[in-house]
Image (cartoon, rainbow, N blue to C red; front, side):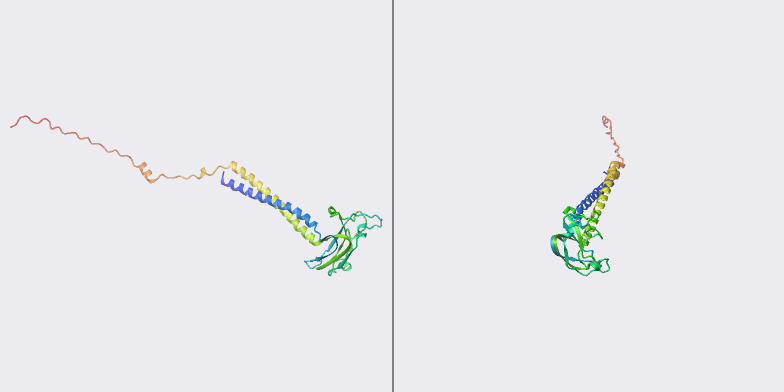
Length: 252
């Protein structure tokens, strides 16, 4: 397989794994988002004390009170029965930012409210089922515009209390992580798959570069000399024995 194809395939696999992990983290944050929404400072309580943080020093939106029940008006007086049956008293509260509308008049105390500016008026538009899965309905709020300090309450009925600004901050943080996880995870998976496809095509179409990288190896020096030096065959000289003939016959 060509080296470039291997690199692209490895990158695709790594990016895909990162995308899957990011997507899983985003999915996991959904449960945290639900937990943040259902965060109560008090549950099924008739009294308690909550610390208002007011981080920016400009006042806090305060607390919301919920009770078990339904919105109904059995006595026909145009006020929800759950409101009439529940009395909440604020026994301690910090100073308020008087520049907020109604803050000076309310002075941190509890006030009935289902929807804004409708108090507990019994009409179909004045309902709040945000926590209906827990069987809770909203009846009112307290500490509107409060600065930092303690808020203490007492109630003749069991109530559930949410610290609205804290819940809002946690939801915003968890929501951001959900979007980030799904966004990066989905993008990572798409990019990873694209790289894998490109790498696969490269692997099928590009030739292996091993054959292209072969180098010429010159023969060794002695082999070159052996090849270039001709073989010389020495001439053979044949010597014949001298013929002295027959010795002379006779003598002097």
